[in-house]
Length: 262
Image 1 (cartoon, one colour):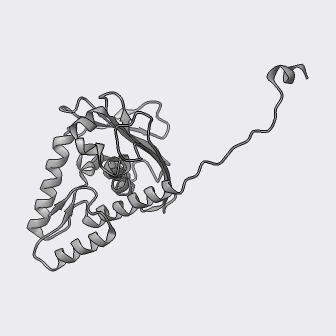
Image 2: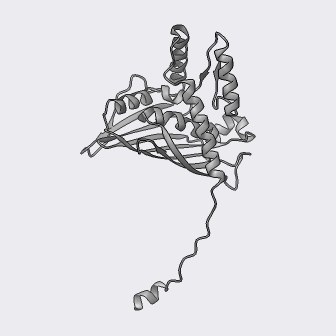
Image 3: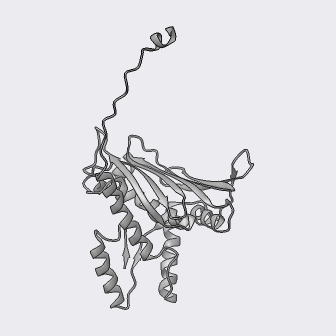
């Protein structure tokens, strides 16, 4: 059984699914396709081998709008918006990329005045802290008025940094990877076996699932990591629901002209 994101609607559902798997001869896999591009696999390998030292900061951006909503009409009526459909990817991808676990999340969400979504989270921003000390700033939107889609991942370490970006239209998407080491004054493009994004990543994921079925082993991205990402999606929504807008009062200050006169 292959489960799209999120793998279930609740942890209780997850437990039921896993119990059914244990009681059968079948397997359950969670879709975590972003990890299967050549750019992400290469970024993971470089970080794991110490190519940029210890990761310290991560920044991810997912900017989508008109094109995605027309292609996935259910987004208009889904209860979950950008957090459940797009930022979910960051919550399994980045821990795997940098080899660390999420420690805490602080987040907020908003919906624009002309939003086409039922969900409250057309836009979302989160600050994610990892147990090893790295900080991750994540931003996502489904409110972009154009058909231009952007996805970027930027990891900075103690000895260098890596940056990926997706380019090309939806039928010809490629993901490129760049590196800058300590002391470099410009980015260097990292050669990739295959820069194709959408078709390639799913083909690699399915190949990994088939290998796991044939050998009885685990795929690169386990069902446990998909479930953990779902837990953090719930935490991101909870954090956003508790956000309040404090009233900020500025002290009375002199006009600029008065200040200069003094």
